[in-house]
Image (cartoon, rainbow, N blue to C red; front, top):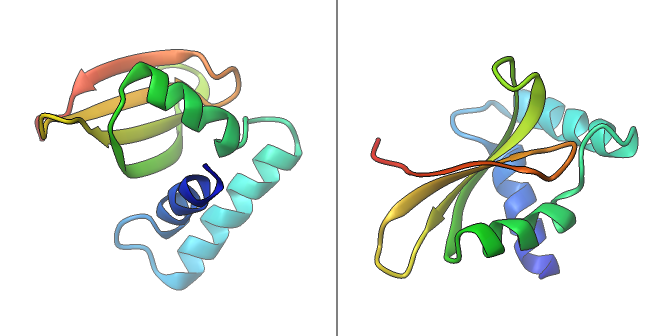
Length: 104
């Protein structure tokens, strides 16, 4: 489970198309939010993801959504049938926000 958490954090930190400086600042921001107790660490979120939508974690992002007035973990999961899903959790409470097919 720890290796999965590390891999997920690497995805979170690396992101898409980020320069090394941006990736470092994202990692620092996520680390700071966890240390401040503003968001839950990935170790607590990953079991919730598995329960909501079993499969292979493909991508993970942490961002603030005005719509939910909260930080949100957005996770892409590939299920056993090869279908891609988007799973969102409130990063502060761990509450499931939504599970929907990712048809992008």
